[in-house]
Amino acid sequence: MKMDNHSGIIWRKYLQIREVNIFIALIFMVIIMSAVSPYFLKQDNIFNVLRGMSTIGIMAIGQTMVIITGGIDLSVGSLMAVSSMLTARLITVHSQNALFAVICGLSFGLLLGMVSGLIITRFKINPFITTLGMLSIGRGLTYLLATGIKGSVASNIPMQNDSIIFLGSGYLGPVPFSVILLLFLVILATIFLKRTVPGRYIYAVGSNERSARLSGVPVNKVRVFVYAISGFFCAMAGIILTGRLSTAATNIGIGNELDVIAAVVIGGASLQGGEGTVTGAIIGATIMAIVRNAFVLLHIPNHFQTITIGVVIVLAVGLDQLLKGKLKKI
Image 1 (spheres, rainbow, N blue to C red):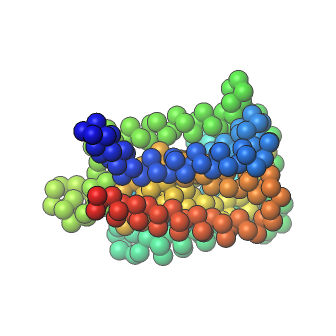
Image 2 (image 1 turned 90 degrees about the vertical axis):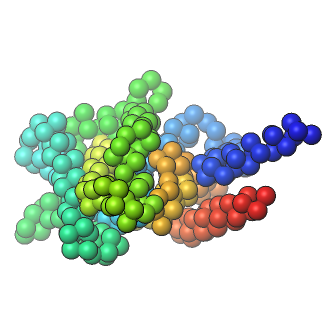
Image 3 (image 1 turned 45 degrees about the vertical axis):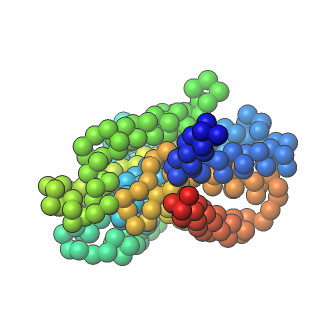
């Protein structure tokens, strides 16, 4: 009997970890999809799902840090687009070295994210409004870079550089390179958040900003940092996607802010701040990728995708809160 009680306590302890609940949901989805579609577990399909998820996952890393601080970044899709467009223009139109162009693209994404952070901290403008404005600014800059001031150049810029194409479409053995890069970034970001002082500062700001200030945490610098790093990861995802498509398009990233925020929320992050992990966000991104893949395999009309994602977000948050409430009573 004591052993059963001890096992029950351990089981309840694990269930209180949000990532465990989300991972269980992911396992159930895999089981269901493998039962209803014989193509789901084929290697090509699995790697296509993971490769498609990788760019959302990379952006979700930065968004996780933003949401942990109690903020939100609606500009991720636009920063993704403008950074990739700048990189493509430098390589294709101005014949710049690929490494130089990538550095410029990543730096530009970081810069725009930093601008959002500075506006939020210096002028005390709500993150929702600030990043909504940056969403529009970033998309406008994307069109400007694509078409020029007169708007006479084609809106899409082809990407023929082999190195960039490898980032998006290359493989290391049977595994897409973008998936390997995502795993590396997840490990790096997890260590950063859990094992470093700046990472603990991010959680402290989201948990209680006033206490963090009194404890000597540089709150404003932390906020600027998370928005800057979010812009950096958006730029990286945009360059990877441009390599996959072999084109920098003006419509890249439209609607991705919903996917990225949904991945982070489904992964267990609290929109109130102070909670969330990169691992959970990646699990959330994987769940969303499987949902989208299910629509393709089951021939369900695409317009139901957005509805389903909204339902999944509400259920994920609602069930998690319900489970936490019940466990506290046990």
